[in-house]
Structures are given as C-alpha cells and as structure tokens.
Length: 164
Image 1 (tube, rainbow, N blue to C red):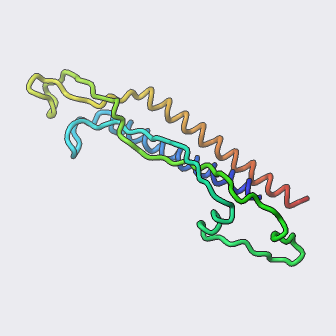
Image 2: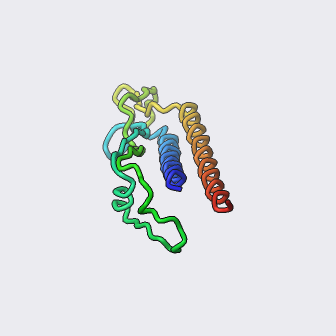
Image 3: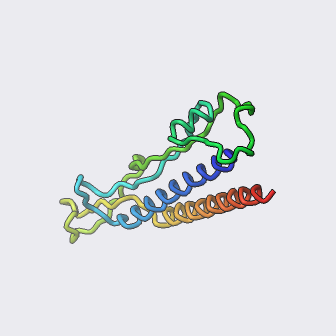
C-alpha cells in the first residue's frame, strides 16, 4: 500500500509542477508586450526549473517526519512487528522553482511614438515567442493529464486490492 501512496504523492507533486508551469506560461503571454516593469526595463521571461532530489532513510523515519503514526485498528490484522521492512530505502522527490530566463533578451522595435522609446526611437520588448509559450502550455497540459490518469490508476488498484 505504501507504494501506491508514494505513486499518488509523486503524481500530486507532478500536478502542482504542471500547474506552476501553466501559470508561468500564462504570465509570460500576458507580459509579452510589457516594456516597463517596476524593476526597470522590459519584462523578463520566466520558466520553471524541475530537479529530482534523492532522500535517504527508513520508511518509519519518513512516517515520523510526516507526523503520521501507524496503528492497528483490528486485532485480527497482520501484526507488523513480525514483518521485516528494509531499514534504509531511497526515495525520490521532485523540487521546482520559478526563475527568470537569463538567456532571453529583448527585441528592439522601432516605434518613436511609444512612451518607452529611447532617443533613437527604439523600444525594448521582451523576447517572448507566443508559439513557443503555446507549445510549453500544451506540454504542461498533457503532463497534467498524465498525472491525473496515474492517480486514477493508483486509486483503482487500491480499491481492487480491498476487494480481494
């Protein structure tokens, strides 16, 4: 059962990451023509960085850290004291953060009538390609759907195991 819960937890983490990606893409599209920010200069494109973290420890230590305790509700259930559980296991966790895309620059557009134009008449626009943002949005949407399918499959497996 712990494997199913771990799978659901990882898929839930994937859902939150894909939601963050969708929010970031929406923010980039909304600010595609923002030439002036409170920090100064044009808007900088943002993106979500995702990385895997390895967590070492025993299953019981992870339960204690999560503030959960296992208890036997029926005396006819299997006594877990007789079961040998691997002491040290490696769990995988996923972490993310939203960062400014340092590689993206800006586009110079000649528009002397714009209020943010420089003395030569050029305006700095964010270097955001709407087509690329739409591709990122579709990718995040598909990954979100895949995570919901994985959660549904894990729930169905848990339900079917209770019927045995």
